[in-house]
Figure 1 (cartoon, rainbow, N blue to C red):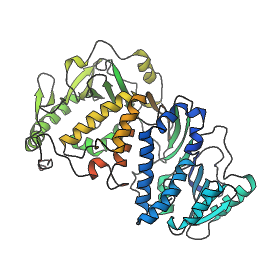
Figure 2: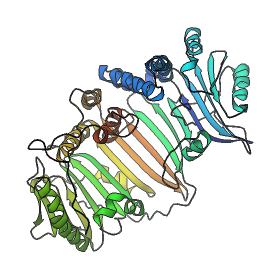
Figure 3: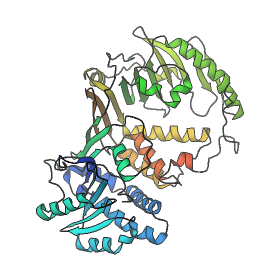
Length: 498
């Protein structure tokens, strides 16, 4: 709502007339129908946890508060937002050729709830039309006449629904062109150039949430999908997570963090894994020919600029790793981050992690079945597997510690977000995500999971939900900074660039 809130769309039965350009469509089945479905048997146990219910309440409260300026308007809008979460709805944003954009939202409501929407219509943004056709309450928005709203009213009058149901009863189906939607609705979104059109569906199979979709890019993708070179001598059991990516070097090279490292071009193949036991046993490796020179340069920089910062903030020191051409961050709490160059199969890698212990590498090698998931898919760009519950606990320990070290706000122990993550942790099983290149312009992605999200995604959602400036930013950066180890000190400062 507020320009109809979070919109997207897609799926069987949502096709627009050929004469129009549909920029965004969405169908949400509604939590009421999803919870009643046998395909959501396991998902229900997560959705209905007391901590999940508390998070749903917090989300609706914050959305209402972020949209209206008065508490009276908040209360009226809050009642409508609860229906948006619980009931089935369709939404579409369309731009007709040579015409201003139009938007429409249709939600299935019983007569009592429909009357509530009518009585609370003043809580809606200005310029919103409201209509009732059969079981559906419709909202429309357009600078002038809204042909889309008229079309939907006629369609519902004839067929009883805004769109025909597909063969699969998807929980969520979406077709999103965010840059186009932003232009139509006047949103100020700062999106990277070349943002793809995204089409995806979400449904359950009783035990898992199944997500499938495509990313359609306007320009051809220049991905170098060379044969996998997995450093199997570095990756050891017992694993709780493993990810492999290739062809994304140019994307990583363009990020601010990678530019800061001054390592040159990013690796064309990158690997991330985590081991059970100590929560900080998270490691990475990147295929980088001649990487020893870049690592030596990074080590020298950390021992110079890095140690100046560490001394200012009383946070250990960066020391050389004897004989391996790398550096370790010593005398920091609970972990020993490091980076060094190494080799595997006569190829050079940049290798590092958060816990530099020799016994972190056991005799148990990377499982053959896990390895086959990667090397057996010819056009695979990304593979990510995790035991999400175990990985959740690991990420919580890592992120909370880093917040303390860098004087950022921790997620409060009694916050709805942190209690929700804690409640989910023992109930989350495997999550497997794949991204495959299907043609020059398109990537196809799949996910099979307990909740629909990875541990890190759930953590970021909770961090966002706790932001005091919601919906702006994360709690980590928007809340008052915490104190580092040793009591109150100034916030960390980096030395001036030379």
